[in-house]
Image 1 (cartoon, rainbow, N blue to C red):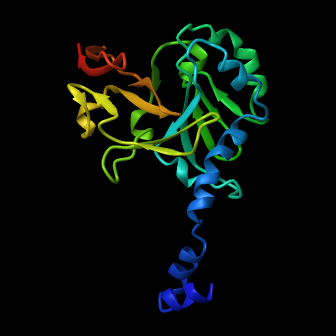
Image 2: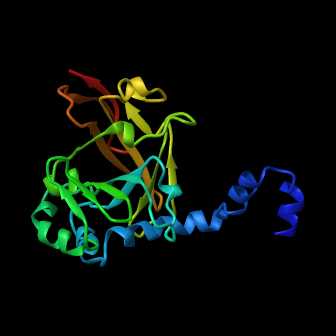
Length: 226
């Protein structure tokens, strides 16, 4: 603290207190796994999901690193993806809702869970069993430092940042919003493995079609719109 005061002591008081209260990198890293426990009160559904065909639950959002377990209100919009290739996980809806933290509100029209903590979770993909998630894309991506989002796998090895070329849009890897404004694929990495998830703008009337494949990873490498 003495070192920080010497370094920043001449700053205005409000800025000094903001700097003093910034979390350490370790705190930021440790906050990501805690996100799961703020959404789920037990791991029944999560562990069940892992038994389905190539299913890997993951949380994605534009600012997951801002989550603070001790903060009374965290205004975060998160999308929960599972990528269940069998599409059978959707039949475990009761197990899913029973595993959630109490006192949530569910907007069936938007497929959104709202928790008292301020966290909103889009669950379209896991509830419908579709191979794409229809979400408000502008709430999923950050454009402050170029196109990017953050993600954390259940039983993952830390919070990660997704940037181009691992965001696949119209014509291939996308660096500009215009290439993904209708939808895109997310190439997420988990324990050395590549897992691709697809998200499409909620309310879109256009069809996002795979235009090319990467044969080495069996993933979509380019999209087109029709």
